[in-house]
Image (tube, rainbow, N blue to C red; front, side, top):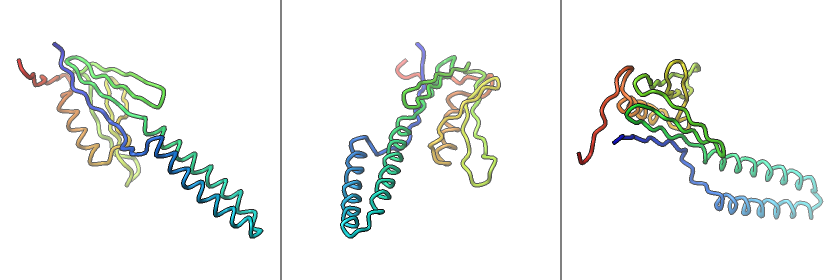
Length: 162
């Protein structure tokens, strides 16, 4: 029997498509009513700016919804570490031999910027957890190192019910 530990990293997105549509509709109706009032006063240039605002808001909401679907799944089994990276519609799968896999938390080259969490082996590294906070990234580094083990070492999984 092969044991697997799974780590899933998803952004904290409370905005779903339905709530985004409702939010956009409320803002659009309000903005267009205000713009229409000013148009009746003869201030017609307000209308194109209201349209630009709504276009920008729609683009930002779409970007947010797309980024909310991005996530990573790290599976640690007896002999391998598999990383599934989902970026919207695309899926990328990368695997490493567990005994040679390293977990690295690298400091950002610019002071004040967040660190980067990498998993890799033999010079190939993949960044995971971009949306995590600094504390969450440090905590996940420790958990992944415990699950994967050091170079040339693969700790045994805790077997339940055997």
